[in-house]
Image 1 (tube, helix red, strand yellow):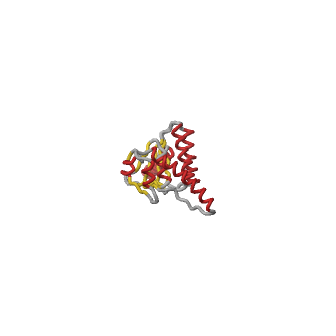
Image 2 (cartoon, rainbow, N blue to C red):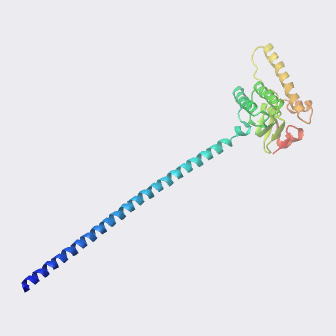
Image 3 (cartoon, rainbow, N blue to C red):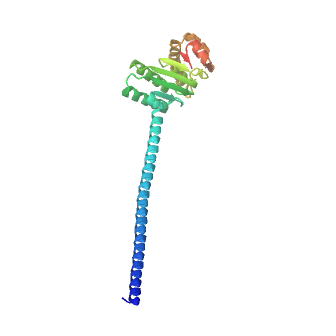
Length: 249
């Protein structure tokens, strides 16, 4: 073989080796690219699952917050007086306020027979006729084995002081007051009509004196003297002393 032919062969082999090297390099780049692509895909898939996990955690947190809020709302709702048989009478005594009270008391009487009931009075008083309707209804509750506690907070004035006497147990706040006075009237009309009304009012007043004297330590005459032509204010200790209440809190 000539020298020129050997050189050509070597050149060809060199070119082949170079081509093979380039091919190997290209394949290495391809493999690297594929590996990077696979890694990127794996990272993307991983991020997708992480995002999904974050979403689930966030949804769980929202659900938990909503549940806690609902539980708190339910707890606050169930803490209201009506679920514990406590009625707060904070209005003047009239047809509407008495009807509202009797309606609620009736629900407790029918739905929970014999349950203890508390009625809290913080009232300036009002209509004697409407108040006496509530007084009689409370007696009906007691007759049906409901233990009724009546309580005065702030003040139980006029008819509210009479209603305080309606319960099995009568309680007054230490800084509360009871106001007692004769029945008042704005009677107008003919003399005979006013005389008839006065007679009726005296009859009611006599029944009120009976209520106070029957629930206290003092006589009917004592009350008649105490409220004669004046407003008779009694603090909690005075109420306890003469027997208007059974307990001061």
